[in-house]
Image (cartoon, rainbow, N blue to C red; front, side, top):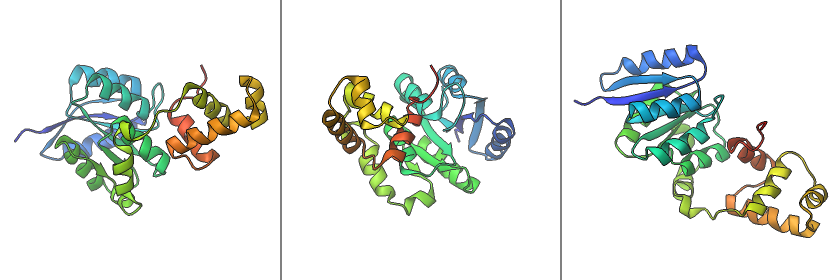
Length: 215
């Protein structure tokens, strides 16, 4: 039986080593490498060509969302399983839209991660069981294909960025040299396209896309 070749990316060394031991104790899984951050994960994914990359969402250098996008763009045949403490819809939909095959919560039993890895290796998608009860079908049907989500314009993105860092509509209008009413229209259109329900969702979206990081 061919074992599933896994690359493990987690910035906390004790957690990373613990997961490695747990995964390697399974007969059908081989951990071919590990990485302490997203940038190293991308480099090792290109070099080692694993079947599955298990990525922590919150990592230094490059977060799990950005790393997922790069991996799927450069090595689309590699499956990605996101591993995180965040069960928020904003996180789930962004990772699935980026091409992740699995989304597993760290607080779940190790069996959830194993099921996610095995499903991803078989070309299937898998969501943590605790998310399934929270309209997982909606996640899968609406966010797994980028084509199902209309792209936002550059100006709409500018408005959301400024909104995320706390600017009022009037301040955004002044910064972008547009009318306040135009700001409101761009904001409404962008939030509708991205299915963001309020400023908290906008901030989460901004964090996941690296908009709030220092240049």
